[in-house]
Length: 415
Image (cartoon, rainbow, N blue to C red; front, side, top):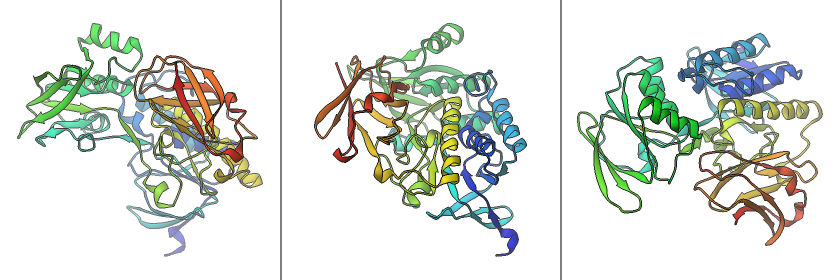
C-alpha cells in the first residue's frame, strides 16, 4: 500500500447515523483532534434520511425537524467541527488495538486509531428471521427497505398494505405508505395493545382510518407474481381469516448490527445482543467503545444521540488519562422475563449510573423492580407502566448495594 492508503486518527467512529455523528461532534468539542467517521452508505445521516415525517431532534437539538433535515443538520455540524466523514466505505476487518481495514470506490485503506467507537445501529428482523410461512413473492418489506424504496428510489410500492407491528416505527411505516399513496389496511400485533404512545394510535384511527388489530398474528403470506393475501390468526381462539393485500411491511423486532464487535472478540450481552458495555460505552476490549442503538436496540434518534454524547465524553477523558476501568472489574447486569434487556449492562461499584434503560417483551402489571445478587435481594425500586417495545427508565442509584465480588446482579419484576 502507498502512503495515501493509510489514514491516521485519534478516534475511528463506525457509523454516521445520529449516534455516530453526535459522538464525533462531542469528541471534537472535548479536544480530540483527529476524528474519522466511516459510513457504508453513500450518504451520512443514518435512518432519519429516509423518514420524511417530523419529530426528530426534540431532545438533542431542541427543535422538531423532518428526518432528512435532522440528518443534514448533524452532518453539517460534524463537518463544521472538523470531523472527517468517509461515505461509501465499509470496514472489512478490525483489530483490538484500533487498527482497521476499509474499502471504498478508491480502493483499500488502513485506518489506525487510538480508539474505535462502534455506532453501527440496529436493523429490523426480516420475514425470514420471523419464520412466517407461505410463498416468497415481491411486495414484502421491512420499514427500512420501504423507506428507501419510497423516499430514496421513488419506486412504486403497491396499493393495499398490512403493517406487522404496532410500535413507534410501525406508525412511521404507515406514514411512509401514505406518502406513497398506499392504503394501510391495519397494523397487526400479537400483543393485547399497541406499544406506541396513545396519540399515535388515535391519530392513525381517526385521521387516517387505520386500526390496530391486537392479539393477531401473521401465519402465512401467499402470492406468486405479487403478494396476494395474508393469513391471520387470533392469538386466543386460533381462528384464522384471510386479508387481501399486495404489500406487507415487517416493522420493529430489532437486532443490533454486531458483526464487527463479534469479529474483534467483544463480549456480547445476552439481552441486547449488542456489545456488553457500561454507561461510558466501554467494552471488554479496551480500545473498543460502543454507542447508540448498537447497545440499546432501539431508542429514538435523539435519545441515541444524547447517550452517544455521554459515551464520547467518557472516551475523550479516557484518551487523556488512559482507560479508568475494565469490564472485567465491573458488575454484570442480567434480567429475567418479561424483561428483555437492560442498558448499561455493566456498572462500576465506585461510579454507579444515574439511570438504567430497560425493555420488556410483554405488558406487565408488576410495578416493582427487584435486584438480586448471589441469590439475595439487595434492592427494590418502584417503576412505571411496563409496555413492550417502549423504554422503561429507572434511577440507577438503587444498585448502590451491589458488591463487585458477588457476581452478576439480576433484575426482575414483582407484583
